[in-house]
Image (cartoon, rainbow, N blue to C red; front, side, top):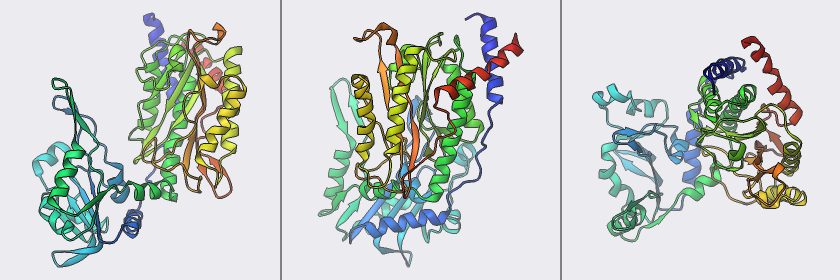
Length: 455
């Protein structure tokens, strides 16, 4: 691309972003009472004579002494709202006596360290955990190992998820699973203790969203919708995928989202047929379709919305044909969402329409997943229930070289929306991002006025 073209695109992109109607994140923090209710719900479902332990996430190394940005484990965050390292929560069925106080909840917080605070900032304190979060018993994290025996002695069952990570040694060609060794060691130390995962209890709670959770999800989804609008307005041939990605993630940050919920997917031309294309280095060409699969994360809650747009602002005949099939499949699948419908039936509706159109072999993934603290959130495959939030995202992906008319090669289309299951049907949460061809083309056409300003 010529230097003048690069400058033109960058200036245009800046102007396009400035035209976003930003939805600045409001103070939507979850009230402490909700976390307390969640802990009470877990305790209620725990077996008699059981203990549940939830640990903070560990830092993950990116390279040498540089770590990835820290993100809390969803289980601990769901039960406490705490985002710090070196935290543990212990739930004890029937309670335990600690320092002459009997409680079913014991929270361990980081030891105060003024030197580390100067590097990383202050962490959750004992006073705040008691006064703001409502914990009666709060201990320093260094006491966790000392009190473990007190929690588990005489107990029948431990609910704990051991680390799923494994270590691979290339020289010996061996993979070592941490969980297996840790579990074996634990059982030897506490003879007769049954160890199970708490995930079944947590999944059942997490898949039904509270009003406070829905507010956070809606904020994340609205920000994602604004990012889609910005991308539609900015997209032009000769731009690079990473430039669209930069605009999208600028909108996320400017609007108050902490992170992208997952690596942003901006796949143009042949990359539109790659489901999880994350490199985003290709230059957009006239005639390309661009699959934009993105999601903002707000206070732990993730959006996931996909739109497919033409790089030059106008769908070709073949692109329009495939797009309309996918859109019809998506609309009918969304219309099937209501309480009592088996989770897989939503996929069956979309698959049937795409199969009848003759493109079943080009649709190679599931239509739906749950949405919440994880982009692919926890939940079973049973009947849909009010309060669940799912995605509906059929697609058709026709790669170059497939047995089909060449005019259809490198056409990838995915349309994804976030849908709340209501008492009597569904509510479309991601309505801010247009999906009708006429609306997309209109929005992309509007921005041509900015080019006339730059001429």
